[in-house]
Length: 146
Image 1 (cartoon, rainbow, N blue to C red):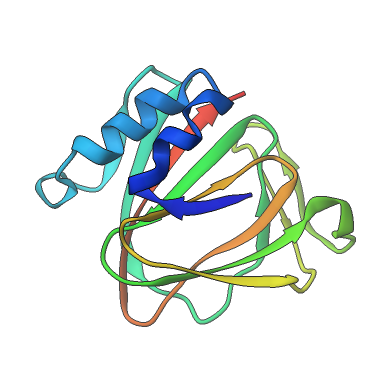
Image 2 (cartoon, one colour):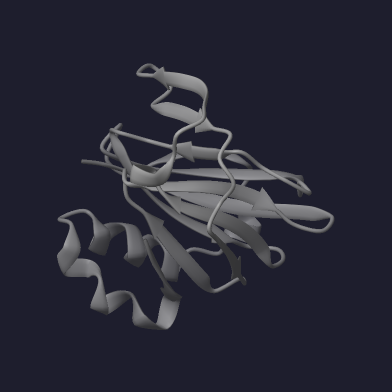
C-alpha cells in the first residue's frame, strides 16, 4: 500500500508501466465535468470507475488478484481500513474471478484518512475496506491490470 498526494505521483510512475498514464489522467482531468461510470483508458488493462454514493459507517475488507487499485476521494475525506492479506483468516465471500474480488470479515489493523487530492494504491496483498465517510462520497478507482 502507498498513500500520498497528487503532487508526488512522479515518485511512483516507475512502479508499473501503466502508472504514468493513470496519474497523468488524474492530474489533468476535471472530474466535476464527468458523469459516474467507467472511463476506459486502455480497455480492460487500465480504466477508471467514478462513483457517487452515501458514505458507509463500516465496510468489509476486500482484495483483488488481477488488478491494482488507485483510489482517490473527490468530494470529502474517506476512511479506508487496511490489513495485510497474509493476516486475513475469516473469509466472508470467496474469491469471484469474474468480479475479481473476495471479502473478509477480519478487523482491519489500520484506518487511513484520505482527503481529496490524495490517493492510495492497493496491491493484491492489501486487504482494504473502502468508502467509509460522513455523508456523500464521490470517488474514483483506477483499475490497473497486473
